Image (cartoon, rainbow, N blue to C red; front, side, top):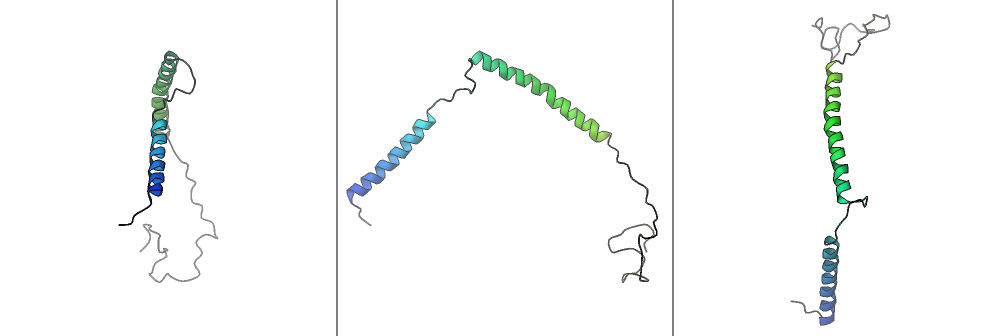
Length: 108
């Protein structure tokens, strides 16, 4: 067991006590509402935003469901241009005219 001089131990304990005292002093402070208004005004403001949220949340959710339910994406028809799907070889090593990751009905 190491023995430390008494003054070092006292300073260490005093710093720990001072640090804990500062933390408890900060915890005990009361935080007031930021606007500085009376409690009744704050309650009225809270109830106003509660009502706005009660209307806005279902409206946004309903609009989202409506949008997703009626979403149609136009698909352009595949045009057979002469420069598309040019094959300079007879077949792929695995046979057929389809690429490795192509899965069509006309592939072998």
